[in-house]
Image 1 (cartoon, helix red, strand yellow):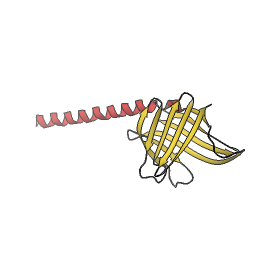
Image 2 (image 1 turned 135 degrees about the vertical axis):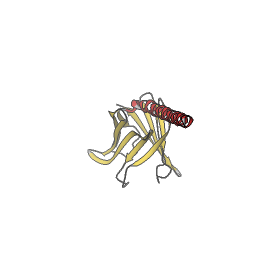
Image 3 (image 1 turned 30 degrees about the horizontal axis):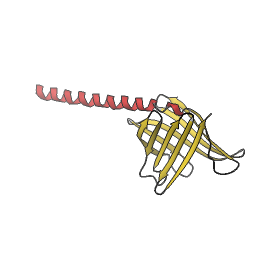
Image 4 (image 1 turned 45 degrees about the horizontal axis):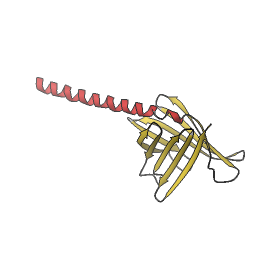
Length: 156
């Protein structure tokens, strides 16, 4: 009986320790995203008379909220609500656009101090979203199937 209790305690302790390690690693990785905070003006808008930007802010310890706006002159042509959050010890990029009935979750699969990659293989397009920082310049890319779009930004 003592052996069973000891074994049960040992398994519980190892599982708890592993969970804390995963949570700590997720938290550390989340802080690597804070360079994203601020306003990013798009530099490669393809249509004349249009402008676009993304703005990110830190809501709390584990949530970054953003939005992407495309303007046609003084009129709003497109708005995308974006969130990066921790859910169940994983980091997700969540895109909420008018074309989708529900927000779409993209799981973070790669991260370093200047960029990240998120994927959702089940989504029609895009399946992959990446952001890469270079000084005050940012390259965001959406890709999937046979197409890819690149968005270039300059930090305000």
